[in-house]
Length: 86
Length: 420
Image (cartoon, rainbow over all chains, first blue to last red; front, side):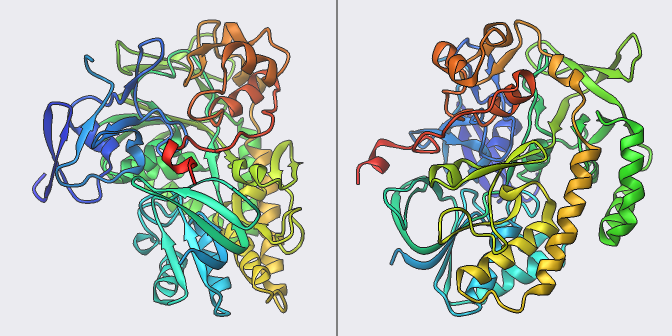
């Protein structure tokens, strides 16, 4: 992406995105769409895309249960998904 | 200053039209929306960036009005007292005070469970469109768009336009229903034009009617779907990276219910009851747009305008808007009839298919229950963070259940938001 101007951290990876991109999209761009693991430990990814289903909830800058689909990427943002190893 | 003459909840077409109509008389107006931009779902990404000129015109007027405040990324949680709304942003909480309230909370998709629907890569139909508009990487990806309704065509056109490869559009409605609906389109020329434009954009993409996705498959991530076509004995197998699947729209009723507004049924689906002036059963609280019944952008604009004028006591001389509302309501009725769900769709889930995604409750655990309440108490179905917004629409189709009263707060809240 040539016009990428925002760098944020998704788990252990630095990701560069254009302004206006959601955290849900940045997570997918980082390699895996997975945002959380279910109560039975299955991988889950965004479903409704509009802040209804809560499948995309992640921890952003230390605050848990933020909806990745309704949050725009900001420089230096620290995102922790539930997708990887604990 | 948190006191307003009129608070409008949600900034889709109905909300923007209501705010615009209310602001015209000089009333202090606030528009609250949980998304980072105004526009709702149909004008997602901001009304100033839409091909529909009405979006930009409304937004420009609202931006220029000194008496209108827009509160983005703000979610309404509950009503501490009449005339008050407790709201939460990503970093703070607040109480808004209103004289009149307009609910324009829009709709969500009805998502139905089938084997494999929890795999990453399976999304709602409008869901993937919304994600893609937020930069979700779909370019070069193979997408099956499935479910029901004209939204599927708009979704396919958007995805196609940003370089996704739309493998097929899978529509559950049978051909005679679709033809009847298409035959009625000339009555609403703007819709006929829209259909033609979409048709042109979608040239070369298979449109499979009387068909539905039976199951999704993949090792950790979606790789293919099985599509049932009519009464054929064997399903088609389509390879894909995404399945965008949604079965029509459901009004978001939670806030109206939490405020005590009466709910009624219209064509078998629950909607907020309103009078000619879009007022709910609670004086001073109005509802416009999808909350009063799924009707699309044109009906939402008409209802929003009526609600905004009525909320500021200017509901005179609006016969022309009444006429628009009447026309688009008829269109909505034809739409609902054409895309009514076939009964087979209630039989796709197997005993081990998850129905409640928040709490991982499976069809086998639910189908023996007699009611939503019984299932909820014994299985935790509907008790996760989405509060039944997804599984409620599914269990209605699968078991005929109607979710009972909403709980406050109507969305997950931080503890500090609740301590006032």
